[in-house]
Length: 303
Image 1 (cartoon, rainbow, N blue to C red):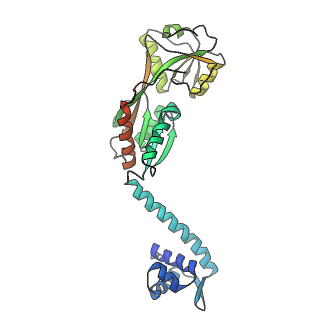
Image 2 (image 1 turned 30 degrees about the vertical axis):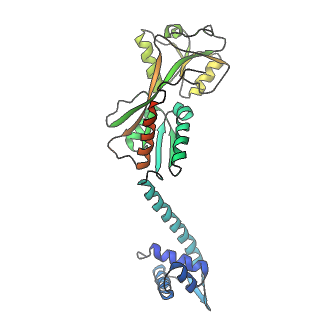
Image 3 (image 1 turned 60 degrees about the vertical axis):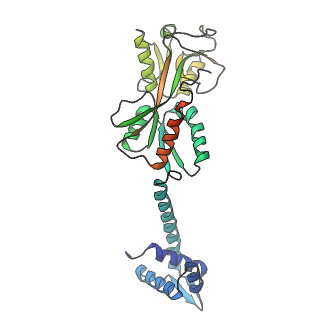
């Protein structure tokens, strides 16, 4: 069995398809005697007859039908494996595995993926959303080729390239006392019940640091990982929040008020493990993303 190879399997499958040694030889561009010897060799390796001769025709035995069904799948898998290997060294047909934050996947990334795929339709993307810690650990472990997170992680061996800043604004219920003001401060919000991301998130770190710089402590009423749920709690009147703009879900039940003194922004970065060589397709996509940093670095504050 150790001597069964792809050539023998292809010969067997073709003979089974046309049920004739001569016609199979024409398709395979081989002598009929060569095809016959390959079938005999394969049957010897398998240990049972795969074909029965009926006049000038040759047909599969019951064992042969079962064998050919598996052989076809093996050949398909082999073709896929070869294509994947070729894609791994091709910038235009490879695969890119990206980890990113929810806000990146919801707003910033889709248009850039579409733009890239219009130019390189053969590239395949595997996209996974996670927290900043999950994305960074995935990049370090080699699960992701690229990560998009913020704020910039302080992790050795990561290559870091800024992409854009997410402006953070106050989001309050539609009937809130601050509605109608052109801007507000953290001091205006310090005594409000706040609904914030969990303390483990990168966004929460940025918010807590901004309060600390002002000598303030936020009054946290609720915490959550999903920013759309955080917004929903604000819509229900359970408190106010600070969110990157634009809103996760457009809504008339909340009001967005820009922050001043100090303005808060979260810098989003592209990262990868410099200890590893990026696959060509991932390197191409990273290069394209970094070339677009000349686009407005600050996203607008809007509802």
